[in-house]
Structures are given as C-alpha cells and as structure tokens.
Length: 115
Image 1 (cartoon, rainbow, N blue to C red):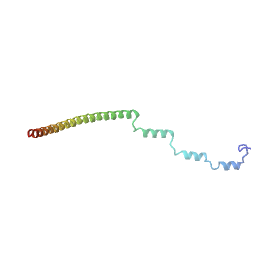
Image 2: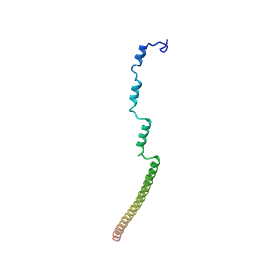
Image 3: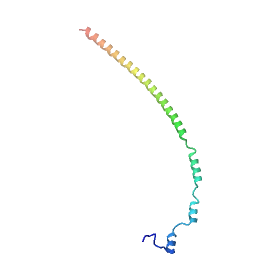
Image 4: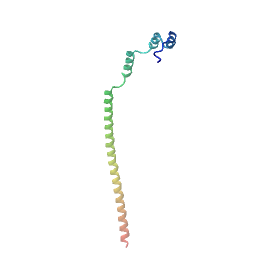
C-alpha cells in the first residue's frame, strides 16, 4: 500500500498542516514587500542618471578622436625632436672629424717635413 492510499485521521491532518502559515500570516508577510510597479519605478529612477548606450558610444568616439589627435601630435613632436637630435649629432661628428683631420694634417706636416 502506498503512502497516498493510506487513510489519514483528522488529528494527523491537523498535525501535518499546523506548522504551515495561515493565509493572514502570508498576507502580512508579503504586505511590506514592494509591488511590481514600485520595483519598476525604483529601477527607472536608479537607471535614469546613467548614460545610454548611444551616449557612451558618442563619448567613446570623442575620447578616441582626442587620443588619436594627441598621439599624432606626440609622434610629430618626436619626429621633429629626432630630426633635431640627428642634425646636432651629425654636426658634432663632423666637427670632431674636422678636428681629427686637422690634428692628423698637423702631425703629418710636423713629422714628415722633419725627415
């Protein structure tokens, strides 16, 4: 015989349902909870100050554009500075080479004429 087919006495039934909440207890338990409309309204108020996807995409694009412009400016500055350093370095190397040539010429003139 299964559990479902076994007859239950009134006392057993009362004992089994006694720990369950009454309808009034359930109503008083859910009464302080927000309604669906109240939850929806609260969510809308919370989300309202946040940026929309379109706004985020717009400002992301503006930021990217600004970053690209600044990167281009930085690269141009770096190229100009690199060219300036290369020019200065070339001039310094040329100056040292001329000085070495002059020193070599002087040495040759002094040492070769004496012989």
